[in-house]
Image (cartoon, rainbow, N blue to C red; front, side):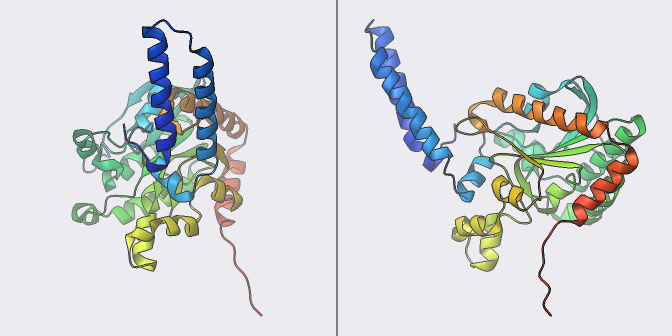
Length: 318
């Protein structure tokens, strides 16, 4: 399992705790007091680490290889998932799965970026970076949802859309731009959830929604911290400073009114407890679905338009 530098103190205590438990069991010794003290120390250490995370540390957690990915949430928080394939133009994009499902007893269409945990899976999923076919497939499924009156849930987790020559030849910019326009006009509720990385237009291509929600340790940004550092500081080593300046993590985006709610993660991050994270995800998404389902279509469209028009702040000089 991937170990982040700032997690080491807690991991070392976990290892000591396991040794105590093993010794108590193997030698039939009552070490309950020592174990209790170690558990308290571990809880205190975890709290200290994860209550004071820097933006760069949250970015590292967002990229953790054991963090639950799109299809993990589909498996844990949804039921009756039926995947649909192809964009009806070029082919299928495995980095953008989607299909029909149920959540909280409600029928929906769910679409999202999917990463891989090993080299083989990452090659299949293109490291979560979708091609034009992925965005066109996503829009095809959204139109299908609109036809049948089903809410759309999009799950964002990408470093960005694929920047390769083939993607440019097949007009990825147009595919994303088309999605931005059409998602604004969808006549069904749309909820977007940033699961981990929310990178640039690759994220926005399925991110125009009535509710934009983020996991506590996800990030959502116009560019990666490394990319920003390379441009402004002329070196990627300044990524931690860039992450701080860019205000790309959930607490900062809430203050800027760019997202609507944050899904809390278990102690240590979502990669430590997939089930608890999925349960929190399902509860919050179901709550927002209930709210949005009660709104007439005209109101839904007007509020969605107003929401995005109100983004940004400026100062006028005389």
